[in-house]
Length: 480
Image (cartoon, rainbow, N blue to C red; front, side, top):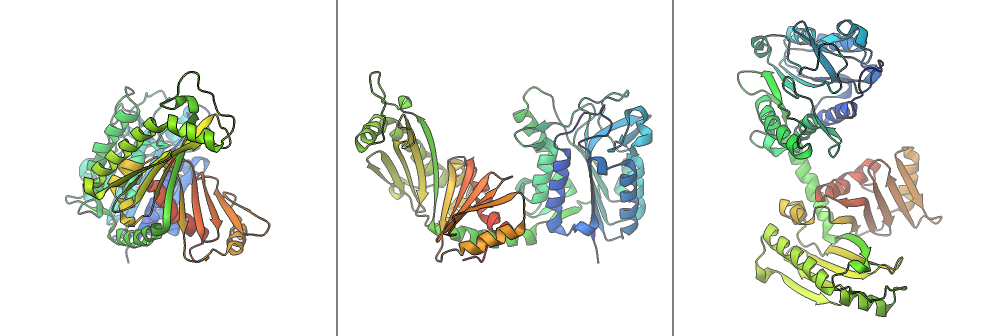
């Protein structure tokens, strides 16, 4: 039986203070491992070496041990992120205990790793190398990594080597991505989140992956880091025919089934988003108007009349984008106007936008967007829906047919003892709020409703991921 193995190495922090720290290297490696696990790269077949744990001795031991277990039908993924350098025509990968005063002696030669893998004769080997030389302290200068053996040897071993950047280029990172740019696109491909990287819609091959990286990385680098240089992913080796790294057919089928179930829950849901501004920013505000000191009915009515034209312009913009992106005809959209509000009924959902004074601070007004009465849940997963409503909502409320067992939920979360998940609740356990500290999301359970509150306005796919994954992480699927 064929097995899948992985050796994942990342050195973001070094024992020698002369090396610059690499902010995202180690978290990228963790994400690569998580992306590979659903494809049969089991924890007991994978080595994850990070920081000080990626010493020269540990790296060499992992390569020897893992290669000794490889069989002809097996697959190996080897990834490395850290500082790398050339010396006398040989490429070296630095380790957690590499010393600047003895670079070659305390680093691992890339040629040695490639030869160790080649000798196993395993069915497929894929190497992902992300060398960084930002602030490189070595005397050799900052040159990009290149494999230390001939391309013919790589092809003979069915070994594909991917390198994040070309010679004399830097491996760039983007703070908006919170990842290295090349690793970001690599991880997206390994997760199956980049359709353009797949052959026949479900196969990630060495050829399709490199084509995707070669297109996407330079484009993202230009977009995020204007004027800071270029990054050109490179690749060597591989089989004469495309070698399949991952096949998502089974995973995509399972996702589709799960998504169908998740979308079904949106039949009784509504999305909400809001923002507040000073009343002086209203379109009809004039010098001499008095700022309200209470949110009374009369002051609210006054503010709504002052802001009507600006609210109408906002609604018209949404109406136009909904029609164009979701393909509705004029006759399929029914618009309405109320006191301080506008609404639109489409074949798939109802959308409204409203304006009122902020009760907590009457010197400000609140604009609220609500999407409800979702008649066709599948529309939420469409690209057009995201084009209109990305970063517009920060709350989703789902209503179920039966009430949640709040006490059971509280007990289960407290029993988990997970420091990254906290639960807040009323003494009578009539409701509770679950806080995901690392995800900036709160889940509020009350009666038959489950509300997802995000720290900021979220992308639609992030909202759907939360609806899909948060209850499963907590084991709450059956807690009604």
